[in-house]
Length: 295
Ligand code: SF4
Ligand code: MG
Image (cartoon, rainbow, N blue to C red; front, top):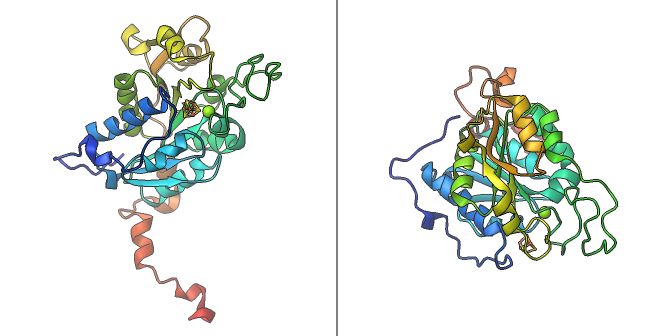
């Protein structure tokens, strides 16, 4: 991946926005927001050198809490427009951010094909196991039996096994972080940005207002860093096992990485050997022949 670097590098204040944060007190979004900025700053990527795309949800309110190029799109559709932007300009680091509700229900088809296609973008899942923005309804990642705002008797459906599902699609990068561990999450995001293809980053996000089961304290107590226990991120089966089995402890860090699989753009035959990007080629193309009647 080619990231345009500037030796002087940006500072955290360069990513500051004049907009006030509207998240609830102690929301995990603050930690993820900080880690994203820190990762970009430490990689010396300026706000004008990256694209950040946001789905709809509490996390999506980050779209105006950061300086830089941002796109805030339709519910469940963050991956298509992020991937499209990347294909048009492969030099641009593109980060797509979505919630567990949109990503595993309304937009789950896009996630499937992003992994299958190995689009060279980062996908950050704000996983608070509910629809927070609409006041705490169950998502596909809410555990069965859990009482939620409009489910006072508990959720009747089984929880979607998200990590097993992701691994079933032969991903090339899977990581898991925790909104309460900003240094670790910053490191994970830096590795995700540097990954060759689609980087799936599941971030367990505390939502003190509506998630009263996987709280900040619970996650703090149960999460551990696989990097400190010598995990080999090339071991697919072990990574899948660590990702899926959260019964006693929750594995965090880079769980799986395969840099040998070409990304989607590399596989495009018409783009082979091209030294220019589509956005540059469009600028010099004469497209008036396609609509002569309007000239
Ligand atoms: Fe954060 Fe939950 Fe409040 Fe949304 S509802 S801002 S996710 S604490
Ligand atoms: Mg959510």
